[in-house]
Length: 299
Image (cartoon, rainbow, N blue to C red; front, side):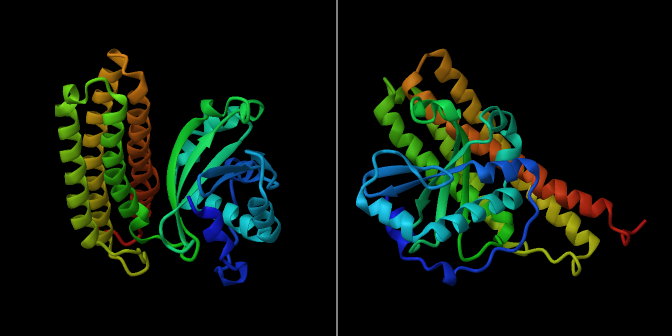
């Protein structure tokens, strides 16, 4: 965990200016209540929206970092919310829980060996009253990926999400060795999920390679737009197959009361579900609307 160290090296003046973006009420309120979690060695610091350290007791390193980098932290928070608004449905599909918790969202940053440029972010929500007293009761919302130097994502960011699902599956297998009473008893599920994840990754990356990384709608013919939409829908079909298998595994683990491990499967299913929702709402839903509104479509 080196987020404090990596961020401390960044100069706010070197970062590209964020374009003005009108946020809806949900994203605006979350921005005002966004808490950051930053690692410094083995310690994970929880920062309030005003950058008070809520947990644990701050040392000189984190205190100095906050005093020097407040503008940078403002930028990071704004960048996170803009990414959530454009390239995610995490807040939209979890709005009930977020609103119940007065729009308090925790963003846990994990630097991706990029010199402070790229981060994987895990999002949680928790009651403001119980944030420090019952931190373990926080609700997992999902994860996203942010590049501080490049806001625009290739392929709508789908590639990173698919690669993440494969990486997470490997972590899930490691957790099974620690948490399950008899991991071999579930060998068939692990094998099937692994095969589905590998298929999702290989087939989806082949599809994405055939598509333009960024879509210029002024230059796309209607037939091309229809084909691109169909290709993203095909990717989603692979994700849905993975979801169904993970859900079946989760149900079995609940039935057998494998409580120490099932929560990891539930979080994994959450990420799979989030990707399905993202493709349906922000990609194929958006592209379908573009197709329907086209004035040049052949009769």
